[in-house]
Structure formats: C-alpha cells, structure tokens
Length: 151
Image (tube, rainbow, N blue to C red; front, side, top):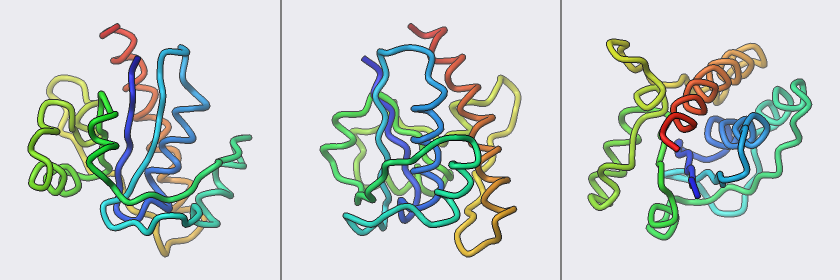
C-alpha cells in the first residue's frame, strides 16, 4: 500500500487541493491519501476558492484540516510538501521522516530539473487558485507515473 501525505502550512489550500486531485487522478487502488498542515488548526474546512476551483474540475473535496502529527508521518510511505521550507521543518522536528519526505516538485522532477516551491494562493484571486490547481495537477501527474514505475 502506498500512503501519500501532502503537507502545507494551514491545510486549507494547497495540500487539500493536492489530496483531492490525487484521489481523482489515481490509477490504482493501492493508494491512500491524506493532508495536513504544519500550522493548521484541526477541524477547519478548505478555503472557499480552493473548493471552487476543484469543483470546476468536477471534484467535490471532502476536507477537514489537520495539524501535522507524528502518527501521520508514521502512516505515510511518502510525505510530499509544498515547499522546501515545509520539508525542512518536518525533518527538523521529525528526523525519522528522512528518506520518505520530499517537496512535491522535488519528488516529481525529472533528472536535471530544478525543483520549485508550489505557490501559495492564500489571499489571492480565483485565477491564482486556478494556477496553483493546474500546477498541482501537472506535478501529481508526474508523481503518479513515478509511483507506477516504483511498484
């Protein structure tokens, strides 16, 4: 079983969008997906614009925010963060997550490509949320190919 944990800051925009997109796109049934935030409050909902841009793709996110906890890292086989800074914060707090924690673009990148942080749409316009959704969709397509090759 492959267990993917997406991590961002507040678990209201990027990581819930990534989780919903992966659930929608995944090709096999041997994958579970969750999301969390380094500074999230437990029990919140995804941002209104994150939900709206997912609905434009026919995806109904079922999301409740969660603060990142050690038990989620133990559950995960792959921890994919939205930024390099998120990755470093996780590894500083939970060194045992080394070897299974990458930034999303780092994990998805082809050899020789420089990984980039996924832009944070928080506080931005609907078009900013669409750009982030489209970037996440592209990166998730790449990680699905990589994970299929691994299994």
